[in-house]
Image 1 (cartoon, each protein chain N blue to C red):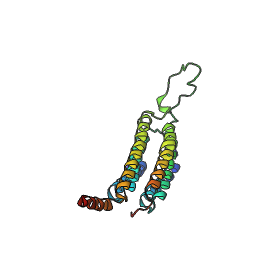
Image 2: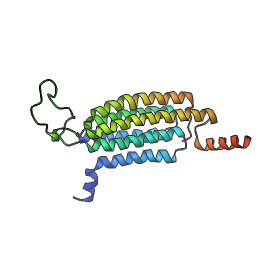
Image 3: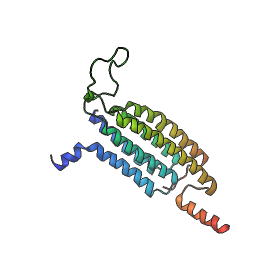
Image 4: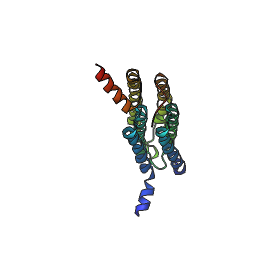
Amino acid sequence: MGTIEFIISKYNYWIYVLLMMIGFYAMIAKRNLVKKIVGMNIFQTAIILFFVSTGSKKGASIPIIQNGHGDVVSHAVNAAQYVNPLPHVLMLTAIVVMVSTFGVALALIIMIYRKYGTLEEDEIFEMSEILRLRK
Amino acid sequence: MIWQLDIIILIIVVISAIAAITVKDLLSSAILLEAYSFLMCLLWTEMGAVDVAFTEAAVGAGISTAFFIGAIYQTTRRTKD
């Protein structure tokens, strides 16, 4: 297997890394605080996407056992037919944590805006210098 | 998992992520982040993770956009970058 073929066959992982780096760039380089939080959201979603994609299989269906209700299941479950549900459960928790982090960060941003009257990082720094000298 | 659908959605996801961090208006950024979340939800559905997909659709796209728009109305839409 050549190098080009290796890169193309793992295309989804490359795109996840690209998304992660877009979020990381926004967290570092953007001056606006809301843009930083949007970057954090993109970063977390890319990681969740990577973990969920590790559970998927070729030719598998969603992890619900057919005829699992009602009559007693008498046949053995063939695990190769179903997508692995363990990463799904872990990432479900991560999504809830992501949204609560987002909410707390927006609440902090509202408090910062009430104190300094701006959301740009450099303007907040200047305002804090002015407020410190005025004391 | 259909790889053609997968790669089309992944490309649109990357485009909407770049748009959400480069647009000069925070309300547009909120809507683009919502579009990003819904496309992500579509991606998880075609991977077979339906529980993650509907949690993302309800919580990631719905509630967090409502929070975001509420926070923008409390503060400002203006941004320099």
